[in-house]
Length: 323
Ligand SMILES: Nc1ncnc2c1ncn2[C@@H]1O[C@H](COP(=O)(O)OP(=O)(O)OP(=O)(O)O)[C@@H](O)[C@H]1O
View 1 (cartoon, rainbow, N blue to C red):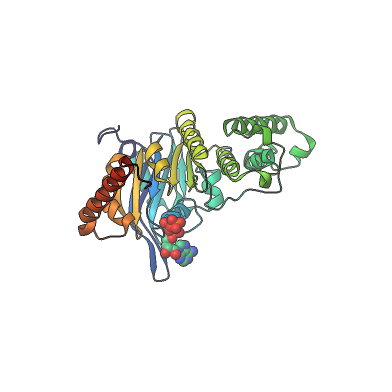
View 2: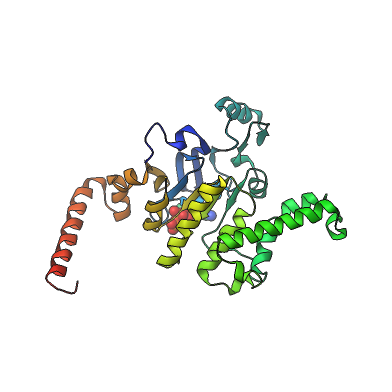
């Protein structure tokens, strides 16, 4: 387990969110929120319905312009804090040099966040191109690379050698991800024909085809059966361990969250109420209170009630009852 001194999110953050606030008219959906996402970690953003999780995702990925706050993405390891401050005061969106790149996402449009800053996402409601084949969905995701290889001309149509090489590499990458998501045998089927769990895996494969540094997944386990959830856990660990990609996920399935997360951040009413390892967060009375919908002072009483109910159920089972 990571201790205070080895926590990647404090030592080597890939994403830093500072004082993020998002207001919709009079409603404060995210309220002065700060947190870090460690490079190479699986980080979960959890909280009750309406806590502000998707709004945070929408700010990080450029779908919303935050009311206030700074969102810094770092690619490459050696980006000193002074560089971030210099970039902030320069009014520019990003700075790149041979050591690494730093991006201020709150200043960037969504398509540039994916293409330049290396942040890819999936959605709560699956958004695939249903009429295209599974393979075509993964090739479309590599459109930017192919356009560059064509020189933004008709180079693709006339088959310039550079374009042909890029097209072959795009297909290889797509096939590789189909293999890792167990979809190779469905490559030529329309995406809409896949079962639900397979569509969720295809969305992740599509995001990975953009070569992200940070993969943001909005409820990837929603609607999955236990076997599919276990396969998802294996896929996410593979992405973290073998591809040097950090993962930020919103998830309601606590089995998934507690099993695979290196770091958990808990929101309630737009504010952060807990932040730490899965173990720390699981035992935090504030988190228990938020999920059970009770005040902090009532937590102990509710916990005692839960323990009693659990003991009663075990006793009934031992008696051969049907509870
Ligand atoms: N575009 C919008 N306009 C107005 N209010 C919004 C908008 N988007 C979100 N909200 C409100 O902001 C609050 C936070 O919503 P959000 O969807 O971020 O929560 P969430 O934690 O993702 O919830 P869930 O777990 O149910 O998906 C809610 O009160 C929601 O109604």
